[in-house]
Length: 444
Image (tube, rainbow, N blue to C red; front, side):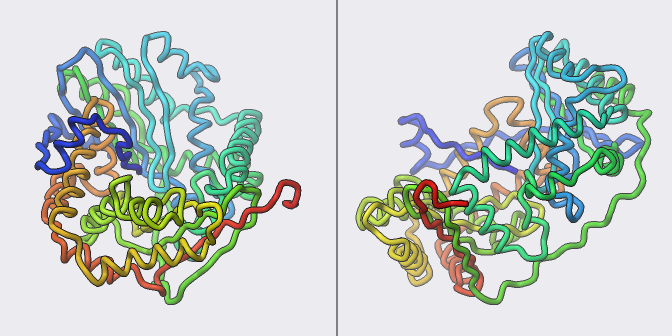
């Protein structure tokens, strides 16, 4: 998941949230029910505008890709738009658009989500179409081969031709040696080339089933009426055969790992990753607050490494606790011309040591907590975002965890941030990636 952080702030709002507690506008689930076939339905009633959004979340992401078939969950997402017995190829989105709506989908390491946003008097159309492709998807061989080539080209353009994204893949793959978080969501090129129609059919039959899905509807709807419509369309879909039991657990890292990547690039780039827990682990909130203390143009990394020491062109910290299993905390940046990669790497460790030796000030902590909470609130500025937050937390275990998340953030203290920095930011627990620029024509 993706928990999207807000990158731009209105000036007045920014000044307010930096030093004042942020109000909370809780999302209320008006109706919650599990159908006999296992499909869970969550309805958020909101009549501010005559629109509604339908989202269906499947508990399948790249962590569920079979060995040697990485990228299959993402490829199947593409195939879901290739038609059913009722709807022709590429017609799904055209139907939604003709009715004044928008639709899309995305795949993450942990789940896959599809959505449609329409005027509320046409939201039943989304229910009908999604129920149809849950049970009647046509995975034609020609379509499978074509879409596979599309995804392979997407990988080539967006990842293999992007030095910094390539380094990210290398660092994550090096950090995880057992857990399938080792693999990119889009898959490895050699694996993508091996995926056949029968592989997609098996993956679809295993994971695209009512008991493995959650429906979230938000907007100008009547909960009882919308629930009845969902029962009519989805109620007859049967449960599927048992899925493979996920049991992978990453062992404790017991020594620093380093990876060097030589690619055509203008400047060296560094990415450092530490294994850390995910929400709702008790340490996740302090890690979240720490990432805000370090990040942004008012954060420590930019002020010290970019402006004061002039070692980096940019520097950042990145953490999201919204993964099902423990993931990574990242530090990264681009080396300034005339400076060396080892200078920037050393500077990152000095910043970490500062926090390990001296906790952040109360002012820094409050500012970071207000930023986290304000960003979280701004995620609720539309019915789509409300539904997405509910769905994401449901994937993590229960949508009610939203309240726990905010409570944990508010309880973070300076000593908590210092403690997690000492606990997780150790040499043995880190993976370091360095991009070494090569001139055009050197790469084979």
